[in-house]
Amino acid sequence: MQSTIQPHNQRVATVWNSGGSEYDNISRGIADSIAHCVLRLDPQPREQILDLATGTGWTSRAVARLGANVTGVDISDELLAAAEERARREHLTIQYDRGDAEGLPYADGQFDAVISTCGIMFSSRPETAAGELGRVCRKGGRVALTTWLPDSNLFKMFMVMKPYMAPPPSSPPPSPFEWGKMERVQELLGGMFDLKFENGTSFYREPSGEAAWTTFSTSYGPTRALAASLDNAKRAELKRDFIAFHEDFRNDLGICVPREYLVTLGVRR
Image (tube, rainbow, N blue to C red; front, side):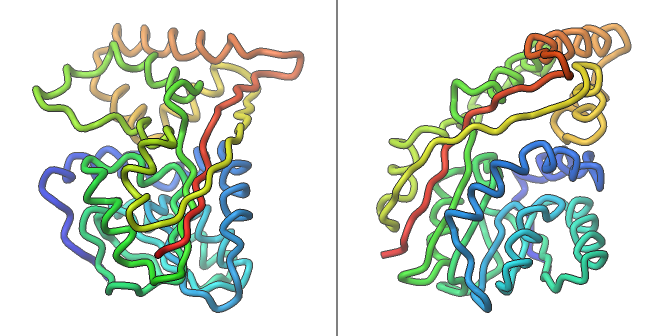
């Protein structure tokens, strides 16, 4: 199934497309936070569960292994193609659809649960995306989210990249890291769901800061697209700053970056 991508999200889709099949390397780096969210969702056999902003499908595969009937939806054709291939390799039956979080191609109350692991937070119109999440979840159904805290080391990594980005538009979209605030999630979802929260920390491990740069500059759409947009001199400066940030978390075995997040669990009223 494919649905229309909103015009204002076409460029966003292109950015995420640039990570391609290698995006699974990014999911591997947050696998502990994904497992945490799946645990709290507690998928049951034969439940109909939507993985919103599935990427290359790491979360959808984790849920499908527990016996649920899973649909993964994403704005990126390239990530979805990789998700389909990985599911085939594991002999998992998962439906993957192209769709915009701000206009999901599903019926009201179609799913028993919706999960999104560091995905919905990047929607450009959060109120609209939150409304769609609530619409497709049945009454008594569940939502589970992981979202990065606004003072997390993941946020600080974005601050390393920010000086190299183009100036924002005169009316920029809200920061995705607002989804890391309990009060903001209550504003977005509290009218539809009874919500509970739990904090967690994900640990991103690599042999070195150089290895972190290689992973993100080849696998993570926003970093890869940014690096590609720069001239050689600016790209070298970005690489230097990105490596230096990660080297601040060096230990005897390599680097280990603690990245703090919020888990939200809600029951649809």
